[in-house]
Image 1: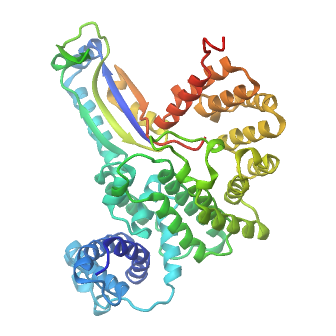
Image 2 (image 1 turned 30 degrees about the horizontal axis):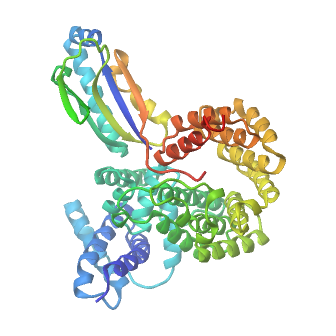
Image 3 (image 1 turned 60 degrees about the vertical axis):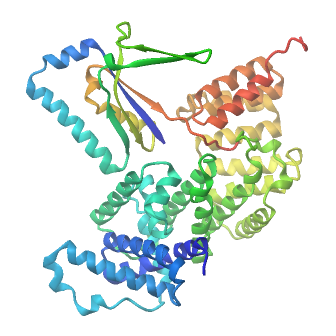
Length: 410
Length: 123
């Protein structure tokens, strides 16, 4: 007998292949995707009892195709006559299974969709998750996710998108959209520290699995490799990221011996190999920064000049408010906190940073470095009030409390 | 991101509403129905409720382990919570756009509050 968790991973692996095969054969992405979802649900119920069939993929394709035909029949009686024998015959052959998965991924991340819709559709159609699992992972009602998915499919239909690889001229742009979606999934999983872990699908593991799959399809794409390395290196820190009570541990205070060494090694090797080939991109640079942190045995040993150099490049290739702020931290580590504060003051006109709690958190950190305890405390307290995250708020309040003037020290 | 959209009303806004011709009241209700439909269709709606009159409210305080309840209404409160939307959308800009479609925004006040989460990014 096969354990349900093993069956779960098998089903998730097969999901995009089955969906790809059906859509290629019958068109009608909307109904095909629903049919695959139902076939996956049937398998999840039957296989743990009856055992995994000899040809699991064939089983799923047959069941999904049958379901699709039932749907088409009930969908429109007038179309019944059009159902030919060819339609009743399940699609076969192994050709182009890889291409199908890539095509499916690109379709789910179609530019006509909003990011939450892209995420939901990708997790279901490519990730093979159920609507209920996605809803639990995002802590929203199942109906909301269901609605997002059906809305997304209508939009795809309305946009006239077809189940085929986009022309080469558009491909890199479309793959960039896929990477953005995978990055969003990873981040959601990485930042969510609450909730009953056993009931929630590990979104980080799911994002890594999908990115790994994409990397296998496109081994020469530097940014795909970069994103995979970034995820591995970031996820490696997870065991040391929070204390048992859920409090955040800042990077500088993490016990690096507790980082997942295998993930660090894999990520470091991958990014070193990728950077050597070029051209460089934002994900590769972020992975390289994470790798520099991972290479340092302790926070004090960090090669900050190298990190600053990487942030300078990132600032040119993909500028943004978080790059600006993190670069300033690196500036402070290389050129001193006064220089960091000077550059931070220069960002005051940056609309994207106005009122952002991170500006105050960084300011607090730099003021603490120059020894201005009272101003640092005030900055941490503003940041604590403005953050949307409870653990981050606790962390910032603790930093502020540590700076409270004590009657003993005078 | 989740946002709570709070709809406040005041006696003056209620009087205005009551004085509106029936057709305009119907238009207001249709605007709510359309907003709800759009939010459900876009997958942004989590839950929305309209609250019963504040005279039915109860205030609860616990002091030294003793719970005390007081019945409404609270005449001194000018702006009263009349209903809410809990939505999930991309940005506070989008949540603000939704809030601006709440008919009460024209007479009372509609407030948008981001929901605090139990997640945190790396320091």
